[in-house]
Image (cartoon, rainbow, N blue to C red; front, side, top):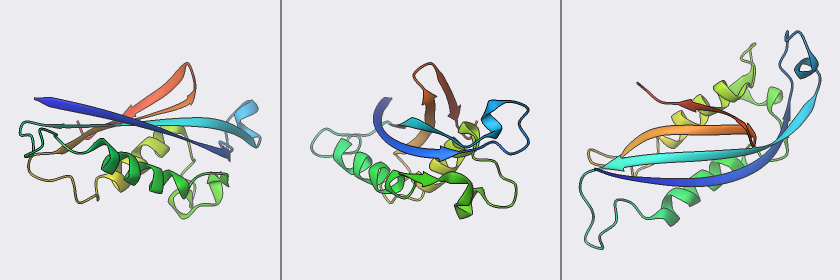
Length: 125
């Protein structure tokens, strides 16, 4: 089994509505997002999937979040607080739509750091 990882970053603000503490106020993070993909078969070049392709899809997705107030985005409307957990789930679900994921190449997890020492992992399992 092969497993690849790519990372990208973005800047965004949010607030956790209803939180009893500072996170209820508007604040921002330098978010880091890691995507992991797995598979058994390599292509004719000896790659599971080209890092450049996965990075490009992740960067395009994160560009829609960059320098945004996450609470205002449709993905986090209706009381769906833009926590790191919800953000990881959103990125996972959007990345899973990429055409390079197939019967061989599977999206394993998305990990989101809201700070260098605090992160969450979202996976289907």
